Structures are given as structure tokens and as C-alpha cells.
Image 1 (cartoon, rainbow, N blue to C red):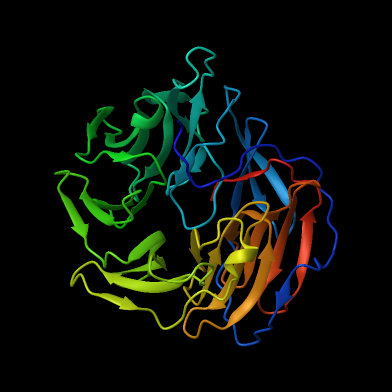
Image 2: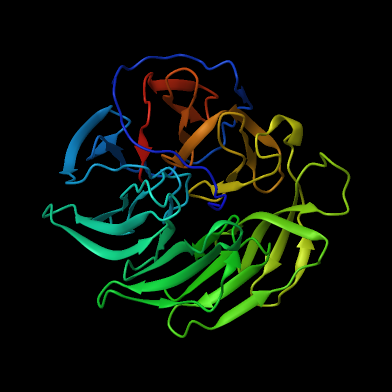
Length: 371
């Protein structure tokens, strides 16, 4: 049985038409006091091409044309920058290399899917295979870009285990972490150049020293089931999305903090304002901070998903958006997101300062945001 992973979505940018359409599924509270940070260039994957976009001018330029066609990569979760990125693809923090996972579909047996982690140099167009393994389901690039956490699964049917190893780019050696868990969601986040955190199906947060591979489990109450987590910028704390086992069904997700240094677990000053019955996942499965950490996006992604964007100090909602598959911040004011399933997916930007939502690309079916 293939493990359940967080859903992400992949490939193909098409029609580039600038229009101004207000999406009716969004509710906005305006904020005229916001200080806007510098707009980031956004890298986009389309039909084995990576382009760099300036969404202020709606101009794009080709960066690299990749050599492989990607097949069957919907299950790959790539993490490196704060955002809801595409499956299978990611940029390293220096934006020098593009990473992807190539999958070779197998008919017999269907449970074994050979795959490889491929790195493309955006300056020279050279590509190289860094890691090969069956059933790769995720990877996470370190802040310095010298290590990659690889996640893959082994076994058959009900005996499937999720395993993790730390790949040293220089040597191509991947050292296995002494932690194998049963199939389920498995998230990794780098905290600094030498430490990353794992949230596995055990619903516990484990810190891993990438050099020594020493494990440190941060214990929480047995009543707390952690569905997602993220570091709070400029602190030693994690923000946890928690559903208590003892809580009645459809209780809104609560937020807790977990301190990496003191191990203290505390109820956060606000919780989710989203209705679990209206969310596809029924719980908060993603967090994305704005560049200045003044706002927080949280919720669930997918066709029946819903996200909220709130003031991080007060929890006051600024916006709600349905059906988001990918999202990233252009600056501290504007959120760039892809939305839609049954109709062609659209790429839009949402301004917190003006309250305006503008569809930038009406047909962004399969588009992949890389940063």
C-alpha cells in the first residue's frame, strides 16, 4: 500500500493573458499600514522548461530546458523554501540548481517505482543524477544546498516503512537515519545548516543532527495529534497544528507552540478559524509565513481545501481562499496562488493592502511554482 502523503501538484503553464477579475470566493480585510518588502522573482516549471517571472511586469525569460519528461510524480513532496511548492521540483536556496525526481513507471510489480533525484545547473544546463532508489516520496534541500534529506519507502502492502537518509552532495553518499515509521504523512523541515526536523506518522516531532544523525524526540501530550508544523521565524519555537484525541468530532484545529530548547509545550494565543467540515483534509495541513512574518497562511490544500490568511499577532483573518493547490509570497503584501480543479486552474495574486485579487493567468493548468 502506498503511503499517504500531503498532496501537491505539478507541471505546465499555458495562456498568458493579463486581466483584472475579482474572485468571489475570497473575503478580504484591508490593511493600509502594511510595509511592503521587495518583490521576489518567481521560477516556474512548464513542459520541462524553467522560466523566471517578474509578475509586476508579467515578463518571463527561459532559464533552462530540462532533458527528461516527468511521469508519475504526483506523490513527490519537495521542500526548500517557505511556500506551497510543486511536487517533484525545487530550487536550491542559491537558485543555482533545479532539483527534480524522475520516476520510471513499472507495471509489474506496481509497488516498486524506480526513481532518481536529478540536479540541473541553471547556468550551464548540465544535469546529473545524485541519488537513485525505488519509491522516492520526498526530499528537502538544506539551507546551504550541500545536503538533501531523501525520503523513500520500502516493503510491501501492510508492511510498508518510511525511511530517511541524508545525502551529501559532494560524495553522493546517503547516510540512513535510524528512524523507520509505518506509512503515513512524513514531513521534513530544515532549521539551520546542520539540523532538520521530522514530523512522521507517529505524530511526534524529531530533531536530527545531519552530521552525527543523532535523534532528539520532542515529547508532547499523548492527547495531542500533530497534523503539521513549522518553525516560527526568529524564535526557537515550532507552531503546531493539533487535533486532540479527546476533543469532539469536527472541533476546529488548535495551535500549540513547542520550544526546541526548553521542550515546553503551550497552547498558542489563537487557533484555526476554519470549519473542519468545509476543509477537504478536515484539519490544518499547511503553514506559510509572509516574508516579514507579519501574516500566516494556514489550512488545507486541494479541491475541497480552504486556507486562511491571518495577522500573526492577533489571529484576525485577512482573507479566505478555497481550492488552493500552490501558494507563495511575492512580497509581504501580495500572495501568489494557483486555484482550481474542475475548470482550468488559474494563477492569481492577492494584495493585503488593497484587498484586490487579480487573475494573472486564467489558464495555469499544471503550473509548478518552484520558490
